Image (cartoon, rainbow, N blue to C red; front, side, top):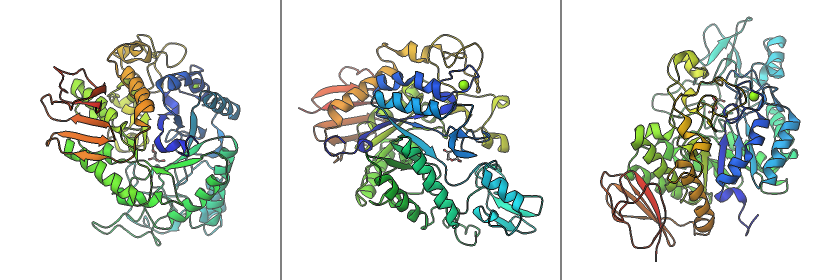
Length: 505
Ligand code: GLC
Ligand code: MG
């Protein structure tokens, strides 16, 4: 703790999508030693922590979110010694390490699910999951990855899977499930992790009786009140360890108010605030996200988070219209979020300004895309370009394409190509994180939204004023020192699709 403020409260946390960050052994898939060898990039960038997506033993049907053994490393990614080496190196560089926890479901190759299949109907082994005897699917729930959420096994029972068929949902009303996950938490806490990202944190409990959704009503598969008891128990475990161990929820709930319930003082520390990510490019939309987020979190005393992207959504430059305009808007949005109180999550490649890649259907790997035939999440998961002019762009040793092919025009966006180049997105992020540490961190949390016209988002934190121009003509900036801008000023004005931080006199 510095000055009594826990590290995560205003941290910049970098999401490493393990399969696509850096490959050490040339198999075209990222791995733990690859990450360790590239940690300098994160230290140079100036982030405070990294979050690793699942690297646990897994058949990889959902690229690691189908966990067969949550307390071991999949050989694809290395072993426990490689994990320990990563943590040691990260801590040596002053970086905290957050790992992913997947409590809503296991892989169908988890020992528990195999035992459930073997033990048969009515067994205690089956009670750890949702098995139901019926002639038809027990309800009309659909899988998030397309098709029904139920699959039938040979003896006629159906099991529930909100995601892929290989991701059976656990029955959290069975006390063995809670005990298992408490053990998993302790296992990684004992190995020195600083926190957890909780996958599908609003899942876990389903409405009793697994009823169908009433039109316009809440989704009975999510956000049940019982889930909060789980997080109270986990908070007690986190608090029993030295240092500021934290947890951040992935909870795609409807409103900031629903999100706040996960952040009561005896529950989780943070939740991803997906409301900015879901907002269109417009000053009123951003204003409203900021106002409602801050108001709702203030009620529970929680610090906000800001998220522009992750491994599940279309990359921001593409969401914001693509091309030069989309790229400029993504830079402006990132700069704006980095000035808000609380912490910011940066998804790998955002600092390079990567756009969504148009992955050819024959290379689709996302189970959603494979099950539905609709373009999925592969386009934001393409391996990172580090250097060079052809694939794999320094992602790993050897020649040739990694597990998702990289575009052939990525030479100019690699880390090496952008390093030291004035105006590059990478240098913008480095500058922004430097100024954030120097100036923004010390500011009061209070945000004053200003009226600067319909197309301008303007707010003040103490002596810092932030302007985002979502209109189509340059705007005047207030008198003061421009600390950083996402695009060159035009005659002293802030161009369209740009943002700036100004230190007021
Ligand atoms: C979360 C993950 C996503 C995964 C799903 C199922 O939403 O972010 O990648 O497919 O959970 O575990
Ligand atoms: Mg590898």
